[in-house]
Image 1 (cartoon, rainbow, N blue to C red):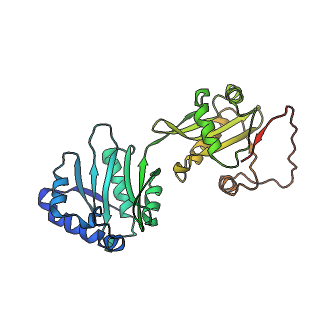
Image 2: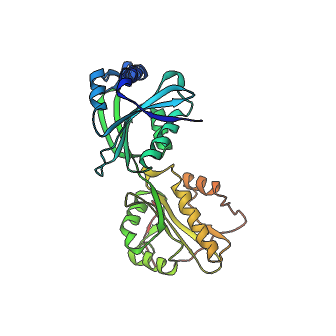
Image 3: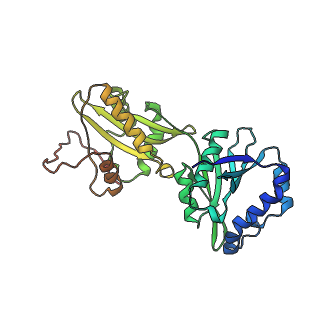
Amino acid sequence: MCVTLRPAESGDLETLWAMQINAFAELLEKYQDDDISPGAESLDRVRAKFCQPWTTYYFIDAGGEHVGAMRIIDKKDGSRKRISPIWIMPGFRNRGYAQAAIREAEKLYGPDHWCLDTILQEKGNLHLYEKMGYHRTGRVEKISDRMDIVFYEKDSITFRTLRVEDFDQAYALWTSAKNMGLNSLDDTREGIARFLARNPSTCFAAEADGRIVGVLLCGHDGRRAYLYHLAVAEAFRRQKIASGLLDRCLAALKAEGIHKAALVVFSRNEEGNAFWESREFTVRNDLVYRNRTLTEMVRFDT
């Protein structure tokens, strides 16, 4: 699919405005949100936005036609870049044009530090933005009995080895997740520091905008490796962060001459078991798992 973004010019404003009114007419009728809907904006309002120094309107073009348009706000002052709004014309929907347009915008403006908002009740929109790497901020604004606005942000995900000073953020992430199997000895700051001292190159964190959003512990005894406490912040799931953490752990293990890795998952953890199965960690039914506690501890098996 070949999609291009062409900056709109002042002579394009009536065409742009007519497209916007047409594209949002159905949602305006559905939610009656006259105060905020792009489908209710006047031409003068669109013209005023066009004249803002931080605003650029783009036609989304494919096959020689305007299949949609988008407005990008970039104040270049450290604030987030914003898409508001983006639309695909009715006859061109469900063909991947919106995804392609967002990718083109990221080529022009960079892939991170974005924000946008959309209608919570429009599940297709939520799926699109989450598929494109946007995560919910937790902010939801109620507009009416039938309509809420949900807010999204997007940041580049970076991966690095886990450090002792990351403990507070990592522990908060673990305790917010289910089925982690934490305990009062191994999962204290001292316990994690001891583990990291023995395994400095095989434990990883994922960061977004300076905040840890994913963690995986991995260590080995020189013969076999064991994985522990994989967790990804709920708002950042479905962005392949868990796979990114695992891939880095496995590569680090191979570099240290380790040829096999194992882990333990609660049987009730359906999501976790599905993930490990998808990554070819198979179930062994020919073994009996045994352990012995050498020191009494408190378990936090949430």
